[in-house]
Amino acid sequence: MSVVLAGTMLKVLESFLKPVILAVLLAAVFYPFVKKLSTKFKLPWFFGILIVYALFTVIFFGLGNILSTSFMSILESFPKYEERFRMIYHTMQDSFAQNQDSGLLNFFFDFNKDQTLLENLSSQLNIVPLLKNFAVNFTNFMLSFTKSTFLIILLSIFLLLEINFTKKKVYAAFSGHSSTKIHDIMNRVARDTTHYISIKFFISLLTGIFVFIFCLIAGVDFPLVWAFLAFVLNFVPTFGSIISWAITTIFAFLQCYPSPFPVIFIAISVLVMNVFLGNVVEPRIEGENLGISPFMILVSLSLWGWLWGFLGLIVAVPLMVIIKIFCENIQVLRPIGILLGSGKNLENLYNAGK
Image 1 (cartoon, rainbow, N blue to C red):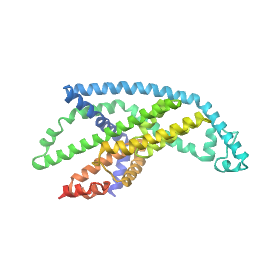
Image 2: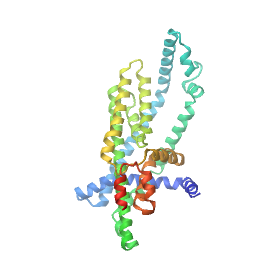
Image 3: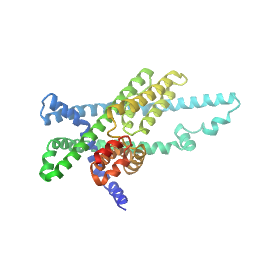
Image 4: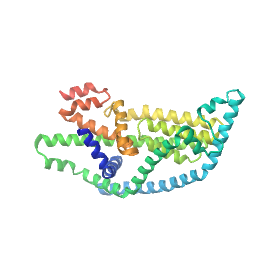
């Protein structure tokens, strides 16, 4: 009953909680940079925040203008790519016909020459509704983020400003051993969550940069769009990078056919890069301190994706990390924290619980 009530409250308070959570994530990303400016360059904390957010604003709006121009170019070029799809389809159909197996292609996809590409995809493969749902969720997320940008930035700035006073506030609000325990839990949550989000941001940025470079080398149109798509979708564990890889490869095939080399290069290079960054680099940087059960990650993605759409897919793992840390540090909830974990640090958790 309490779980249903909590889910209902999260759904009802969606418009209020989304900007707050985005502000927390943004503050977690920028906190290491502000701290670096404060400790290494001896800048006052407030000026460090101003510098970081000024750079973020310039990059955000500059990238936004470039992306909007690229998206408009894609829309203008759609008839050209639709015609290329028709040409590829008819070439494949003729190839099957020559091998006396012409019905095989139509068994999977019966292309109607009198309909447009979108009409064929909608009627034959039912792809358009799926694409529309994804596009609507993604667009709503971007519009919500854009409309709430000022509020999100303001909340994250105040959150960063108050971080330095957290310890004093906790010790003033609580007394004795409880204040130390609460501060330690809050400190670990802040440290580990910031650590996770910073690494995810760094890996996603690297992914976007490599996709941009690979698209330039292969001569694929709109490299910045595919790089941005890879950057955003990489925040969604496992599935995001697969979707990004598939979309980029399909577009490369559509543009470069019948030449196989650019398509093979994009498919292999992006796949190898995703596997290397996701399975070698990221675990080595992150370590085992945030290990979460893969099953619980899938459950978390399903739950938060259902509740909050595309944003839910992005915040699912950070929220799971926070819940796991809280559970591990509260004796009564410790079994839940262990069950949420990957099982790789059971000995350490057992010794810590003694």
